[in-house]
Length: 204
Image (cartoon, rainbow, N blue to C red; front, side):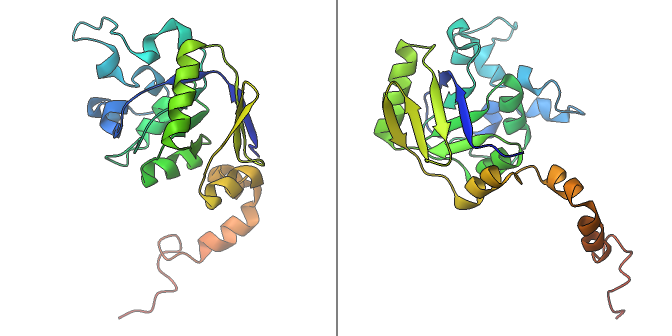
């Protein structure tokens, strides 16, 4: 499935170096599936020891329907856990606009169909200020134009070329891509030693 444009309201989350353990605390990694991950996102920052909500953008009713997360520098650093992106996605986020991302986190975003685009510090500050003032502000992300569109203003963004082409070409979902080319996938898999019982590996 090709993804070329995303529209929605924003949710601003300030702070540099927000790591994956903050996004999803380690104790939730033992879940068998990802189905409930959306409820664990930023859990320790959103709730106290008694489970009572604390002040946090993800608890703020103003941002309840938001689908575009706005963050600062080096977002998603730390461990490579896929759970962090799963939690963000299952909370309802479809795109993240940030100053920069951890490379592994960025790769996980692409693999799960979440746009992760980069803008400069001043542009991020401008976006956060606008969204804080007007939570219902509509934000558009155009991959063909490589711009963020809002209130008659356009902000240019950067994105790794391989991620951009994966979304616009429709092959970000590798499971879907392989199933759509099943015969070729089977032929390639048959050549892999750990699939064919190491038949093609010379004995030593």
